[in-house]
Image (cartoon, rainbow, N blue to C red; front, side, top):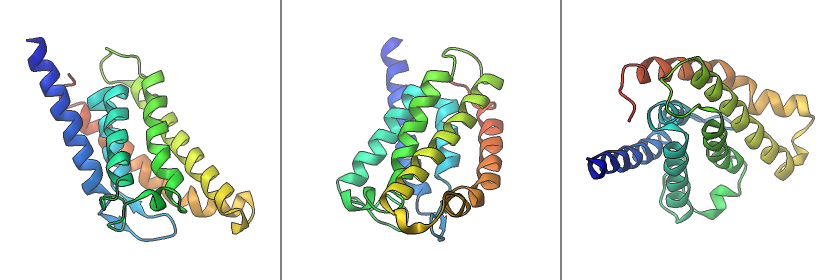
Amino acid sequence: MKNKKQLIYLIRVALFTALMCVSAFISIPITVPITLQTLVLFLSFFILGGKGSAVSVFLYVSIGALGLPVFSGFTGGISRLLDITGGYIFGMLTASLVYLALEGRGERIGKRQLAAAFLSQLTLYTVGTLWYTLVYADRGSVGAVLLVCVVPFIIPDLIKLALAFSIAKRIPRQ
């Protein structure tokens, strides 16, 4: 029975890695593209938990770093991780680790997990925006950077969070 649970868990992690890859291709191209990746990230939090989510995102980043075109715009490679949006890619991994620390393992999906996912999203914004600011410091003031890197994504990401929470409550968590 334990081997079956482990196999199902590994299949779910692999599935979310694949979904993360596919979700990067569906985007609205602006300075920092809006993709469905945060929806998949939130779903991975709620369905896989923090550990599975972190493994899935780590695999996604690794696949992309190897050069496979899994990042937005059908791109991949180390250079993409070091470009203007690289901080947001690493931010997804950091967000998974924050979720892992806050989720309350073994609990049913509820307010605690929703709050953990929200704080994880704030972590993603922070890591990505700091990267953007540090690497591309000539982009302007903090307010200007926030207007480009965070403000346009707040409402879409809150909608994605609510949608993921609603979907995940209907799917049994292993």
